[in-house]
Amino acid sequence: MKLTDRDRHLLRDLLYSQVLSRDQIIELGFFTSVSRANTRLRGLVSSGLIRRLDTPYYTQSLYTLTRKAAQLLPVSGTKLLAGRGESVRFLEHCLAVTNVRLALTAKSKGTWKFEQELWRSVDGHSIRPDGLLLARTPVFIEVDLGHVSLPKFREKLIGYRALAQSGRCHQLFGFSSFNLLTTTTGPLRSRHLMNQLPANPGFDLITQIFDELQLATFPSPGMDLP
Image (cartoon, rainbow, N blue to C red; front, side, top):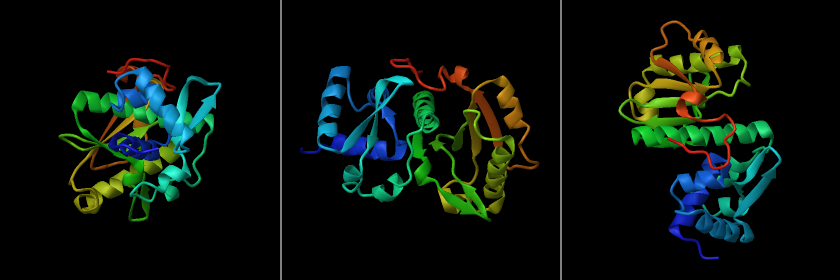
């Protein structure tokens, strides 16, 4: 099977997104119709480059990258695939991150950076946001589905404070200041997360519930994004 530039871009997106639904693939601009998407995705599955996941919790097909495809990409794809899971919680989070990405980039026309492109260590703190929106003010993204304990979330915020106060933000990411947007499940959870913000964080924490982005926590087939 001869790969097109579109195929390679799709494989790269699948590598970093970890799993995508067919509708998300279309919404990301890889195909202009369901029939075209289905035809090409079947071809990529038959060639062993992507794998179709079936889950009773989601009626639409989900797709993930294979090790064969990872070896064709100009990044360390095989390493990024190691240890990747397929639990309902894992799939739910991956799909939610992509839906947040679609909603935010549609509204801001900003550039998206993936989690795996952002891993940093600052003064003993691990910085691993779910994404970064490069707009007028760079915004790190944390997608919260209510599974992370509040002390664990506070540790994340302390890590971002260390980044903001380190003076190394521009060296590590190319910008000097940032905000943090956390999307979450509801108003009560939002308040609990806001209460974890440490003193003098050096950044603005914004929380937004999924309903405000017109998103479900586990995306419904065919749902309309902003």
